[in-house]
Length: 132
Image (cartoon, rainbow, N blue to C red):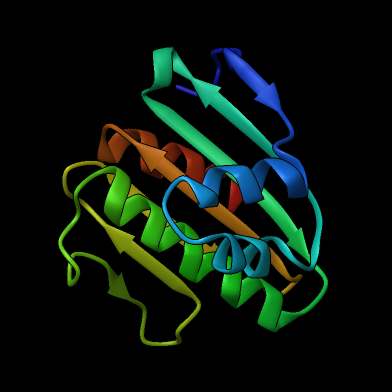
């Protein structure tokens, strides 16, 4: 799957994150979630069947606030029930498999990886490339 070239490859940036989150949350929550941003890059594959978005944060707390906001965004955007995400035992990731395969992972480096795919096959391909 990943032998395809991405159809989108860009940076959202701190301001872009604030704008994105303001569409779903109040301005203060959106600003707090984007604070501590140190860089990001997203790739979109196969007509939107897969998205991977990696971001870098100033602190563990900044990464956690971002993860919480992205999870709330996904819940509202994809109409995922409040208990639709499962948190890993170590607390470093969240995932859901309905209606899309969405996974958020905080890496030891302070980076956060967000994957949003149409199929389990895409999720596995992105995990193999970006989480290993």
